[in-house]
Image (cartoon, rainbow, N blue to C red; front, side, top):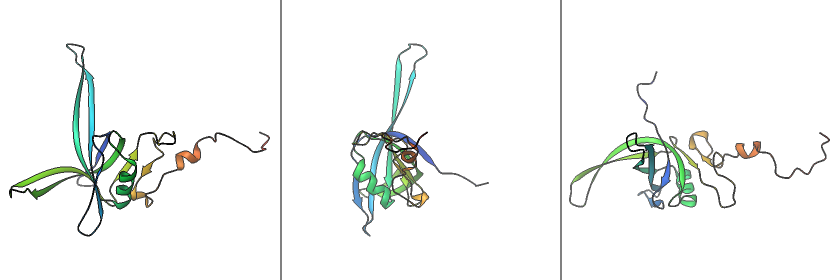
Length: 157
């Protein structure tokens, strides 16, 4: 059995457009701000209550970064899998600061676009980007199993 597991799964909405930057070696890095909201009904008053948490997400995987840059925007609904990492950095005043982020590395992350695409096709499970599968392209298996809208063949049954 493994000694420990560091895996984060988030389903939420982007609070802003993705911020794209580059590392010193030219690799693309995308920063996201993702909101997750818990909702419940208060037992005493019966009122509906919400609590929103904001998560910093950093994408280092080049293919996932390209997808995020091209298809994500403020309000987009996403499913993310990554790892929690805390990094130390120094601010402009020389003070040490710490930031904890959900990180999608080269082989340790998944990104699923949950919004409808512009062509009206629901994105749901169709737009899966996973470098772990060895293919960071569209996962079209769900589309291949979907019934065709117009069958134009002469099969008698």
